Image (cartoon, rainbow, N blue to C red; front, side, top):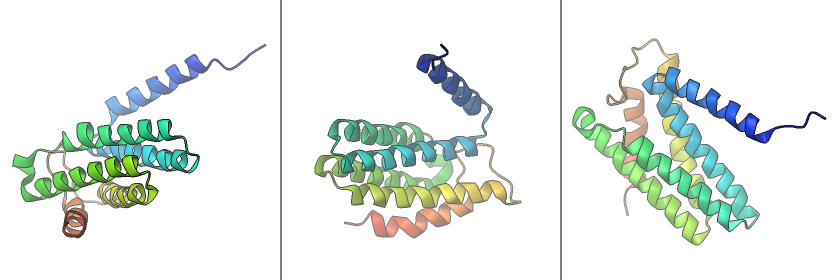
Length: 159
């Protein structure tokens, strides 16, 4: 008699997400973008294992779109300087690795990107829990994020 209305549930979830986005600080928005990419990547790996290549491609495309249109597009290279440039290069590397993972059906490439994203996300979360002032704009890259970027940039963007 009272079945689940999937459309209603989806609409409710969308309103909740939109409300969260509108109320979120720039730092929280960046963390939400990382969460979205990481979730899409894990789901893509599951689809690779099930040999569901269509959904794998959809999910990896979604992850790449979030990286390119969310994370990379939000960088202000002028204000962020060398760290923003390095972060941009790291995002470009991640997009390339996800593209190759999709073409070659290699979950280890997706896991590599998940590792990078998780470290960066943790750095952003650490900023939120510290007593340090959190920048009001995503253009300014905090020191903790800069450390995570520098730790990975030399290794992952070579070669």
